[in-house]
Length: 161
Image 1 (spheres, rainbow, N blue to C red):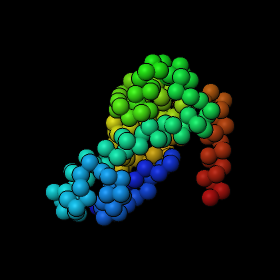
Image 2: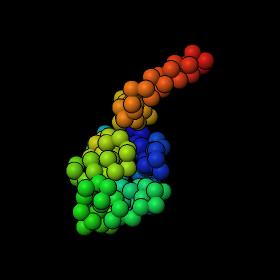
Image 3: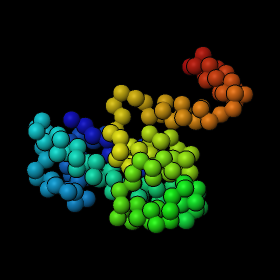
């Protein structure tokens, strides 16, 4: 069994034992000694892993704000959330909900599925290519002229490959 471990804007695949070691070092909700690769342990590992992802969401969001030179108040204004709601999620006192994630997605111009996954509201993608999801999201934001240019560029790249 392998799990996706959040790392910056992406994730790395770890074996169950590597994830167990990371969870142990992070002081996960379960004792690492109880985790193993047996089928019965998979749901426990998944629950614990989702708790780690949710606890990492404020770190990811903080990095996004720093990158843009924003503070919590700026995010609140751009996302339509109250400054108190942003503060509660940023400090980990409140888990991010659907409305919060949609607001963050709009404010940061990031695909909603990406924000939902980072917040632990959607499972890690197995069958879908997350890069393709990003491309489709940004493509939908383009004007018809820009879409045509992008299509010509993609075709030229594919034919030259």
